[in-house]
Length: 374
Image (cartoon, rainbow, N blue to C red; front, side, top):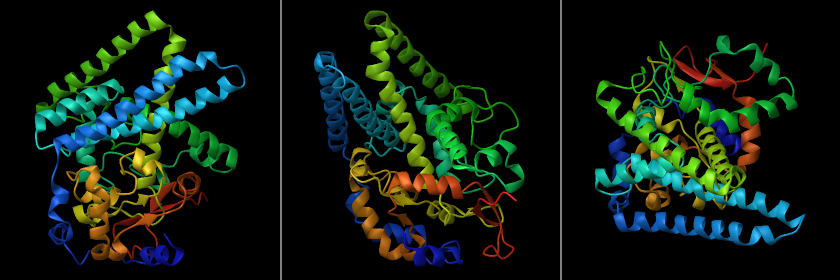
């Protein structure tokens, strides 16, 4: 995103009421982009399983033959590579939750439940909160995740950690490594609720009565996976399990936080209170990012996220084509940042601490990221 373009957006264009409707956007997308192919979706899943199997075979067959320091280099390469592919598989599960995997809801939910359970994610629990995130994106009152703090809500610890680079490194490392677990378990960074909220709590305030059975099913899927892992640990040893599965899973967790954080956190992204929010403005308050070759590995959730918030049932293999189709219509309402993700992460974590109104808001309920701690 060029500096001129960013300034133009910040000066009050991209958060004004769009001159187009969601229907107008849909019309410029080729109709075939909305078609979901069960065979094609399965082909991507099989492709990912093959890559995971190849990495597993190499690690378990040859790594024990390596001498130091080669073995100390081989394991981190395996962990990162396998973690990236697991992230792609997780994204297919996410796509299943949006009913973008196929035309058959029962197949979508079955695939999603199996994939997410195997990756220790409660499928239906997250599916429901994620659906409400899509329905309320960038709403200060009702968005479900990455709800920014107001300046008055910034804690002394946050202020202390952001005073120096070392503190930011610690804060960022904590966010990346624990953020996903804390969100699922304690609703950290999520929408405030009047009592304890957790994705594992069927009777918590997050869910409606009609959803509670599916939360039990999600919990059962995670528990079943934990039991299988326990049996594997007994047979192969805990160290083996951690090296083969545990560390790649944690790499996946880190990427989930990293991807979602960058798609929803940028100095040019506004948030709205009830007086200003509407669905289309909220959906457009997202940023496409460039993860290089990982865009493909992650099935393009990173660089087609704006489209994903507009039409979440479009399968990932049509995402780039559909994004190219809507960009001319969206114009300055389309946000893309080509900054390498590791640089963007450091910059945005430093600059986007809380939100408040400023001169761009002109007294309206529009809030912008700030980092001044005075």
